[in-house]
Amino acid sequence: MPPGPAYNFLCVLSSFADILTHAARIRAAQTTVSVPTIVSAKRKRRKIDSHDVDPIINSSETSEAQINAPYEAFPSELPTISEKDTTSSIPLTSSTTIRNLQSSKVPSSRIGRLFHYGGLAASLGYGAASEVLRRSTSSSEQGKQSSSPMMTEANLKRLVSKLSQMRGAALKLGQFMSIQDTHLLPPEVDKIFRRVQDSAHYMPDWQLEQVLTSSFGPTYSTHFTSFDRIPFAAASIGQVHHAVLSASSSPTGIDEAVAVKIQFPNIINSIESDLGYVKMLLTAGRLLPKGLFLDRTIQVMKGELADECDYTREASYITKFGSPSFLGNDSRFKVPWVWEGSTETVLVMEHVDGVSVGETAVGALSQTDRNDIAARIIELCLKELFEFRVMQTDPNWTNFLWNPKTRQIELVDFGATREYSKEFMDNWLRLLQAGAAGNRDACAEWSIKLGYLTGKENETMLNAHITSMILLAAPFKASTPQPVAFGPGTALAETTAEIRGLIPVMLKHRLTPPPKETYSLNRKLSGAFLLASRLAAKVDTKIIWDRVVENYQFGT
Image 1 (cartoon, one colour):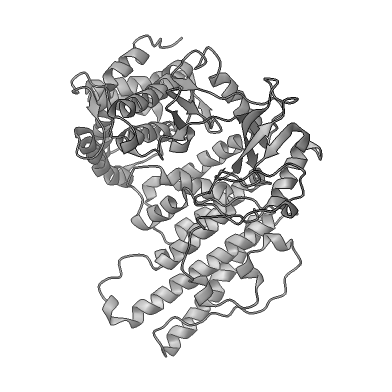
Image 2 (cartoon, one colour):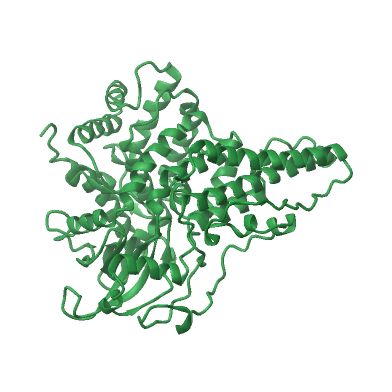
């Protein structure tokens, strides 16, 4: 039976107690200001999978110098994998240089992941205790003690490194928070999340082989004429490889270049425990504002992550978005086909040739192209909400590829697709329309119906919320000059700054968390506007709004 919550919590507490006791002894001695070397006592532990134990925890002696070694995120070039390194008969192909990726085993058992998090908690506790000691004995630090001793640069490096290695829910939470331009997180926490956004490790070859074999059987290599063993992308729950689907398996009857998305082993079973560990670590420093409602955020993420771990679900949404009733007849977009042999943990889809719109140098695109890309993505967001009521809610820029040859935006990730009820969308559109019209009474009414407000808020909170909704709808107002210019120094940037200025007020006085549907919805919309700002685009948002919304039918 896996360890229960009480056991997990006691392990973390024990680690903290050991470290803090050691730090207290040092403080009492007061013999030196420098940080001492830490030597962990040898302990007898019941045997577990050695691959699941962090090397720092598994070693009998670990120095503070090792823990605090300069954090070199990832090598610019990866070691070549030779034929003898793989157990597969699939021909190896040369891999494109991979940025910010390195190989490490994914801890797959619950107890293995527990030891990783326990070790992280211990090292963070020691780092914090060392910082308290340093501050107490350094006169130069007087008057500079406002920052949390938990959030030192060394501890930030520990967190980023461990989240990148663990993958799963922990990394997903970091990626989720890092793409929010809300400026409501403390700078120390925001720094962690932004560092981990593009930092996932990938599986070693032997573990990759296990996943492929369990999904397709030992003869899976017959489906492919080539398979690149090193992925070109790795994220929170899986990694993506280049491959060529054989003519005998391909839906077109010829060899086809494909992207193979492979899920990390046992990730779905680690979601709840991972989020619990990360919540404990995030709240240890008491840095998160109460108004963030972290419990609700984690609850929503738990459901979203469970959905994203089902690749058959994602495949069905790729097919739906590629159908004529969605985007199949819209030549501005390209949705890849999905191989019918895909499974719940391995998704094989058509390879597309575009480049991420977020990675494309702005100077490499004409102003016309930048305007066009931004306009299409904003329009797609509105169509997903008010026509399809189905939205791909992950705004990561790597999910939107620009193909300059076909002049299409290629859509490649549908794992975070969500559906919305007609009742919710009716009310949400009413709220946006009230904001665009500047009708404060209607904003309050629809906000209560949606669950943004309880109706018992004080006047400060009520005014801040309503004002923020009116500012949010600014691009769609009839009085807003068109096209709207995105980017620094624009009127929209000033509007965004006004909204940010209201966030602390709302965090302080908010009585209820936002409706659960709005977590993913706002994430995608904010991501679309951030992308438009990155591209310094100019978009007639009012025309797009009218085109999508004018024929909306309420209550049917």
